[in-house]
Image (tube, rainbow, N blue to C red; front, side, top):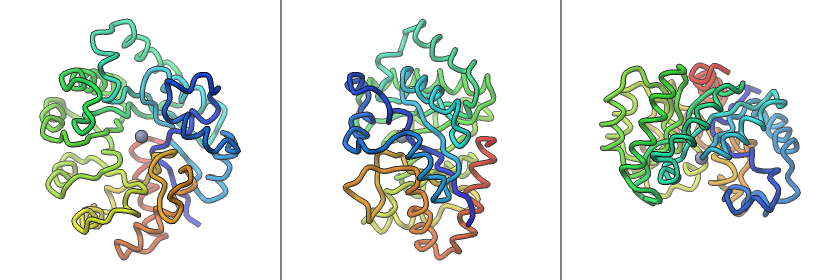
Length: 274
Ligand SMILES: [Zn+2]
């Protein structure tokens, strides 16, 4: 069977002590499945054919955790990022931003993100989100790293910022927007990350968007522990579920599963160099 890659998961918080859980919403979810261990989850993924996974950080402690998590795990790589939800606590915080940048001295870091703009929740001020996004784009360019973008209800501002730089490369993770923004992403050679949302999307237009992504621009992800694909809704999502997402997407697009697996895996390898 062709190998698969989970290009976006948050498994680094599985083993966090529960007293730390207040800061980490992902830890609260993992705690609901306390039989899961970090190495058990990684091994279950590998046994299912998901042989590589990228552990994505959402703030400074979470990113540090991701970097630590991947060090002795050959199947795992890290991405460090400040999520738009967290932008308020980092804007104008010179020391915190310097600490964040210093994480790049670690090894196995293959991307910057998740970062971007989220005007759906607006957990942080819009201007703060924009400032923190620009900071991370500049960091990625300086270190020649690809980026993992989270953009929700904010593409107009996102394109304006994106287009003010040159040679930014990356993936728009958990893509749920329309065909027009899909085209803008493709014009900019960005990859499109598709996860379990595709398996429970009811909107026919939305399914059309997933059919329209050229195979050469598609990568698969779980966003584990969130967004469990059907028929496993109600359980914690794990990287091994990329297999179910691949299956569903191949079916939806009328593509051969082997081909879809091989091409999405090679897309991910090319972007992240893994
Ligand atoms: Zn995520």
